[in-house]
Image 1 (cartoon, rainbow, N blue to C red):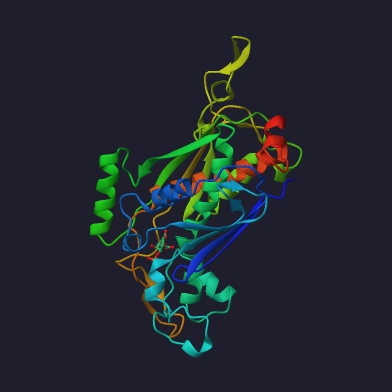
Image 2 (image 1 turned 180 degrees about the vertical axis):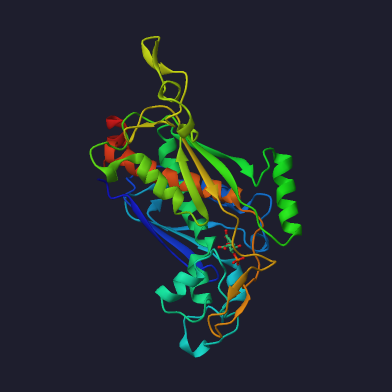
Length: 350
Ligand code: EPS
């Protein structure tokens, strides 16, 4: 096992988001423009709300890179929250600044508020909202953008697309679904697909359940806020026979060739050299302008859920986050197999 791992920190309206990445070998080129472009992609998409008008997420690299190349030491990434200037007192670390401005006690059904407040013994649900917010996916995308740049050195590349927004199947219908939801003070979810190409055969392993790469990818995508379904390959597997589902093998110019990829690039918990195909379903965001019925934790009376602002739809952003999360799993497995301390060592093993 390699030591590739990362930790992130930061509240939605706190000063900044931070990540420390460990286990990146030396000698790899990392371009901050590439990271910033990924951050921009995450901020975009039709149906995003007011916060994205305030932020223009930009990464600052404060360790681990010198003259454009990795040193092998921990890489630290920082994204400032521009909105913090409006929240400085509210999010203060100083007990002298204590205030109940922006406190709320009405649970948002579908969000972390209820279980989180019991788990962490918090009366003010602000203390749950701040870290459970999907805002933290910004720094995860920055980490993924580092992983992507290392994978690209070996020609491994990923992309994503939206398959459904509500019942919409085309871009025009996606917009219509989002406009309708917005007009109704509602939100709408969707389905996205992430594809990674040019993977070597044999990342992951069948020898233990927790080394299967499909399991790792599933966890990485399922734990993105609001994702409720993850599948790999043909998700109609339940309704076709084995003879139709499994990807037959042929020879073409002496090489193994397949005409189908229902397995989504993974057999026996290992990459099989075909494209990795992952589908995810994002539920509608639970913060609604036309609020849901709920209970006030303070008064224990029935009321309406908290609303500040929200996105109508963030499925496009979610797909970008999924690309990033999968890049981290692939890089971890890549380094498990071909890893070393520096670029030259890894290239010779690859
Ligand atoms: C998000 C930032 C958040 C939300 C959204 C995602 O910012 P704010 O709370 O200031 O509006 O816009 O998160 C949610 C809707 C949620 O329920 O978690 C972001 O940067 O992606």
